[in-house]
Structure formats: C-alpha cells, structure tokens
Image 1 (cartoon, rainbow, N blue to C red):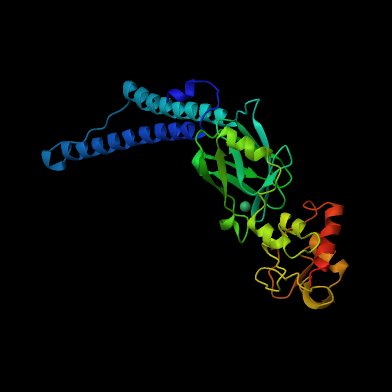
Image 2 (image 1 turned 45 degrees about the horizontal axis):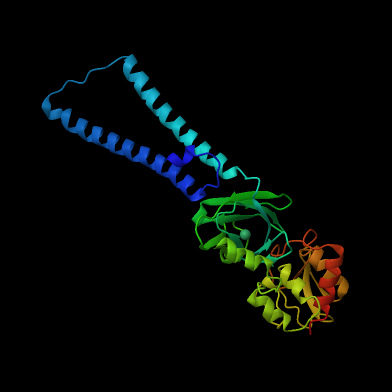
Length: 318
Ligand SMILES: [Cu+2]
C-alpha cells in the first residue's frame, strides 16, 4: 500500500493495480465474513424454540450513524485508492519513450522514432514508455495483462497508454475488443530488454525484425507485396489461389465473378477499376460465397500513392 505515497516516479502499474484490487477484496472478505457470522449467530440466538417474542424497534441514532458512516467511509476509501492508482497509470513522465502503435484486423504494428518497425513491442527495462495508438480499421483494445493495463484503440482517434517495465521478459499483448473473425488470434508480445541490449537492438540498422511471414512473402518477388503484407491485406487474401476468408489474388485479373450488388447477382470481369473499387468500397460488390461486411474500407488505411501500388501489385499476381 505504501507504493501509493511514493509519488509519480516510474512505478509498476502491476503493483498499483494489484494493491487497489487487494484493498477492495480485503474489505469485501471482511464484510462477507462479518455479515455471515452475524447472521448465523442471530439464527441460533433468536431461534423460535427459545421463546423470544418479536418486538418492533423504532429509530436508533447511533446504529443509523454507524451503518451509514462505515459503508460511506469504505466506499470513499476504495474510490480514493482507485483514483490514486488511476492517475498514476494515466501520468506520462516527460522522458517517456514514444512508440506509435497501429492496430488492424488482425495484427499490431509498432513504429519507433528512428523508423524501425516491428510486430512485437521491444522496450528497455526501467524506461517509461508512451504508446500512441491508432486503428487502421475497426475498434481494438491493447491489453497487456502482466502490466495490468488496457486501452481502447479507436478508429479515427489517437489514444495513449503509458507504463514502465520493471523486469526483463516477454509478456503477452492481446486485443481486448472483439474486432472480427480472427480477433482471438490478435496476440503479440512485449519484449522488455536490458537497457544496453535494447540500445544495441535499436541502433542495429539491419532489418532483422521483419516477420517470418514477410520473409516468405517477399520470396515471391511480386512488386509491392510487402505493402500488401504491411497493410494487412494478406491476413485474409492469399496469392496461392486458396480462398478461406476472401477471394485469392492469384490470377484475378480478367476472371469472371458473380457478385452481389445491392442484393442482386451480376457478373463482373475483374479489372483494375473493379479492384480499386473493391478496396475503397469493399461491400459494394460481394463475391458470391463470401460474407458481407467482412472487409473494412481501406480509404484511411491507404493514401493515393499506396492505393496505386496495391492495385498494381494485385494485378501482377499470377
Ligand atoms: Cu482487435
């Protein structure tokens, strides 16, 4: 409990939250035991067989003051400790290291001030961290259970989260807002490293941090494939012809598709224009057999230049 009064030095959010939790649970347990014990005692003491005559009791100032006073103090104490903990968690030290986070269906991107980009969160131990979080599509929520912190990642808004890792290790990051089919797989990790190791990693310009998936994808030598990967297209679309969640990009140009437009079936021949429209207005034409509303519009996910690259890339996949 002392942790509350030691000011806003880089504090462990885990300790802060656990202390409040313990405080509330302790009060609840004492009350539960007290109420249960009194109840059992009364059941025996005032048992009918003992011949007690029930009497009405009217007004007892002392009792009323006690049963209003004690719960009020307890609830205010819970609020007070909760609020202290909350302000500690929301406080961002000035020397906090800023990392930009992008959430998308269904992965996380972490962008560092020097341009480094990863899909896991690498941080130095003991250094306050500030995450600036944005969503490329729907609402997500960044949750680090080990640090007891969670913050929504809202489309069209920047939210933040601040914490300091106290010990080296690997901790889970999960998405805590149901965001679609693969929500439950939106896991990654915080990798908290010794300050020196982190510096070494941070200054290392070799891009060893790209994901295994990216490495495999770039092997296909398709222009712009890394952008498709980065923008999250490859979560649902494939380049090998398999179609689980969405049509595959393989040899898509020139093929005939039956699509549902405003609920009516029609036939389209896939061309650049169709691809561009499907990226910006994915629900305008739904290819028969696939679900409506699965794909969010990429209007905010791609700028004009990126859109061109993506369209070109998709048309070149054979
Ligand atoms: Cu999510």
